[in-house]
Structure formats: C-alpha cells, structure tokens
Length: 162
Ligand code: HEM
Image (cartoon, rainbow, N blue to C red; front, top):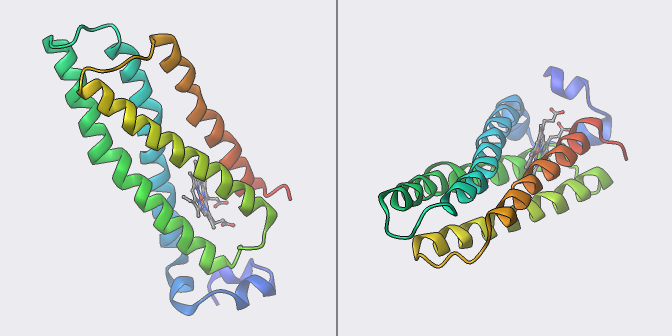
C-alpha cells in the first residue's frame, strides 16, 4: 500500500480512486509547482502596475511595461491558474475532502483569489488601451491582497484547523 494511503484514515482511503492514488504524490508536487508560479505572477503583476503608473502613455517605457504585463499574464499567470485548479480538484477527488470544513474555506479563498486574477486581467487591458484610471497607491494596496489570501490558504491546507 502506498505510504500516502497508510497515513490516511479509512474514510479517506475508501474515497480514493485507484488511478488518482497511484499519481497522488505527482499531482501534489505539480499542484505546488503551479501554485508557486501563479502566486509569483499574482505578486509581481500589481508591482508592475505601480511602476507603469509613473510612465506616460505612448512612451517607450509605457510600451515596455505593457509587453511585460501581457507576457506575464499569458505565459505564467493564466496557465498556472488553470493548472492549480485542475490539479487541486484532482487532489480533492483523490482524498474525497468535499465535506471537510477546512476545504470549504480554502475553496472560498481560492475563488476570491481567482476573482482578483480576473480584476488584474481587466486592469492590464486598461493599461494596454491607455485607459488606466487607478492610482499608484491603489495598486500598492491591491498588491498585498494575494499575499494575505495565500497565507490563509496555506495554513488551512497544512494545519487543517477544523
Ligand atoms: C484552485 C483550487 C485549489 C484546490 C481545489 C486545492 C485543493 C488541494 C487539496 C485537496 C490538497 C491536498 C490536501 C492534503 O494533502 O490533505 C492541496 C494541497 C495543497 N494546496 Fe491546494 N488547492 C487549490 C489551490 C491552492 C492554492 C491557491 C494554494 C496556495 C496559495 C494551495 C496550496 C496548497 C499546498 C501548499 C498544498 C500541500 C499541503 C500539504 O501537503 O500538506 N492550493 N490542495
């Protein structure tokens, strides 16, 4: 029996499909890798917005920030968010954690993180169209939100306080 199954209570083992069990450690490893990439992008993008506010529309600096933001969103943030969700939901099926209270709260916080992702995407498009109306101070404050959510999500999934 794989070590992961031995360490689990019976009700968890019974809910785990054979295929997902076999790949469980790999799913978790790639879930964590995807989370790291998603979070790196979610922490860096609003910082780019802060510096982008200092440049005038149409200048080479403005265009450079636009390119950096587009690449960060399309190459790192969007794909890693999708991978985090697909792998996270596979882990949840493997462990059958659908009724665990810690999981409900984790899911709610991840939905909030995904909503912020959607807002970042809209603000990036505003910059691309030269229509940003938000201030540097606004982006500095928004910059802290993904970090705070991440702290609670990791505590919930590792400590499982309830
Ligand atoms: C997108 C939706 C997500 C779902 C459905 C999900 C689900 C899960 C599940 C079921 C596990 C296995 C828990 C266990 O081993 O007992 C897990 C592990 C983990 N998740 Fe997520 N997760 C998601 C997103 C995230 C996010 C956004 C973060 C961090 C910001 C995160 C951080 C972690 C970490 C660090 C682990 C490893 C915990 C451990 O090994 O003890 N997850 N996730």
